[in-house]
Length: 372
Image 1: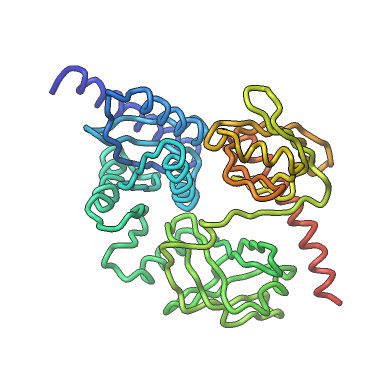
Image 2: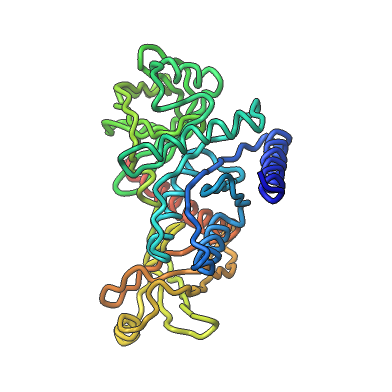
């Protein structure tokens, strides 16, 4: 082992242990991602740009080289569901932008009882499973839940519910995402009983199924709604199905603003186009512009080039605050330009808050409609 290799090993271990200690002190778990990328030093600048893109997209998360061709990414304060969605989108964008196809990926969630060895061993396990797999997919898991383990998953779920009874139910009602945080009050033989807020009951009475999320379970669970008891504020779920691919991960919550939001698209501070935002999510924006500008952009070489979109968003007190987000043209259809955006943590929070405000207004209107 060379001196440089030995130094790099101790450097990596020090950073991993520092993140573990921070996570335990703040009681804020992080997700650890391991992926393979064979560096070609004859094209070192492409590698530099690739790593820079990952670093920015993950809100400047630490990236470490581990072993010959593998790297680690630390996603702070990120649960397993979020990590999987972030990584899937990240490497999809890397493939579009750099023509780099990352196939071997393992993800795990830190645990309060982890040390350096247990954490690295666990992420290594999923990384190796991904390398050995004949299909292109991310392998992932936690201390409490291993989807590919031979243990009966229902027994594992019972253990998890005993540790943390909080789950999130996800549905669509008339095209509007409905999300409810509930507490599991009972679980036996695959049947879940959970307490639900009275104001959310009408949204589930006519539904046949729901999607369950739990911070300690890496897969989305689809469950049939067997019963809704309005008097006891109870929802009963059964026929649990673990989904490797979920609509919750593939689609972002997207809303249409109830008021005009004027936006400017620019490159290197030079205005390219302006118009009104017609839909917005955490990862994309649809902008309506005049047809002449759309034709010019369509024939330009701006696809896959880093651009910038600027606009104002209202907060819960109706104050307007400026947003400036990195963006890439995904498609142009008639007078509509669809942009993939890469907001940092603060920008993402502000967009998420705006979407939440809009949803709440729609839900209030729906509740009034349901009472008629």
